[in-house]
Length: 240
Image (tube, rainbow, N blue to C red; front, side):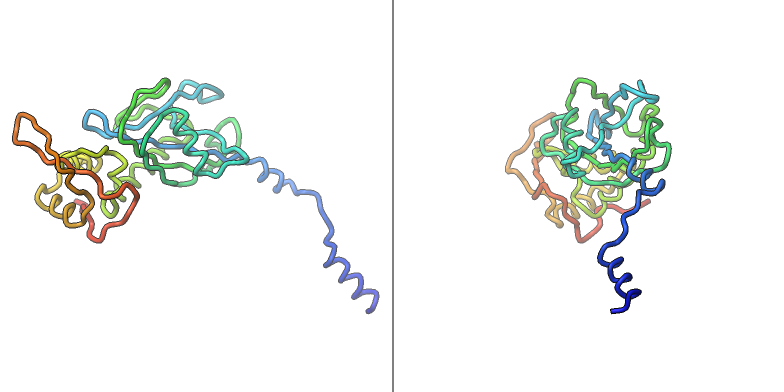
């Protein structure tokens, strides 16, 4: 083998190590965080859980529960940890939503945050947690206003073609209460007969064999056929 060819082979087998470029060093300094948007029903309206920011430039403002991802955690595990640090949501629904990474979104450092949508069947009181109507949130820290908009859009969109409402209701509800969930989130009335016909035909819910007694005629109680996200063959709602 000629000297030139031998030299080239040695370089291919033993590539020369170079110091990280300035660009690489900047990339390495980016932190990864998660933010969780917990939605629940309270007083007949969709509410979101917020906490106070306790440090840095955004101190005193409200934000969604969140934090930095630890080295040993997956994103999903980190999101669940941040949610359960503030709430104890039994049977909650959690889904990755969107990544927010605009420079300057966190004034203190360069942070990319992966947001999650969470649905809880009970809006429990907890220390440091404040529930606000989703239609009337206070000024939010960082870019959490955009995070809230993205979460609400996702929830509204999935109502049409999935059973995602299971995350907002505990078993033992009436069909009227089930429909009210949709109307509350969508902000409009739905045709009672058509909606119930679709729900029962798609077998999203099933009777529990019990009724609730009140001032009017007894109302049959239902539970979800399954508490896992599934798609439906026929859209439950239409726009307009």
